[in-house]
Image (cartoon, rainbow, N blue to C red; front, side, top):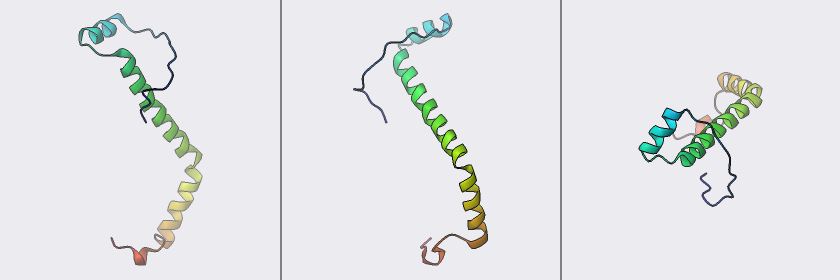
Length: 78
């Protein structure tokens, strides 16, 4: 979900000088890389939280599938 027109908030980050200089030398847009990395990290954290929150249900559901099979399995075409 890339939101290119969303409002921006100026912020400061501290980078090791070698990382900063290498990024600049290579023409890497530091802001874009930070946004992309933060979006990926946020997505992964939300997924981890969802898995943690729903772990009990998933465990019970998986046990039920092991015991009874997949619902409507006889009508599956694969």
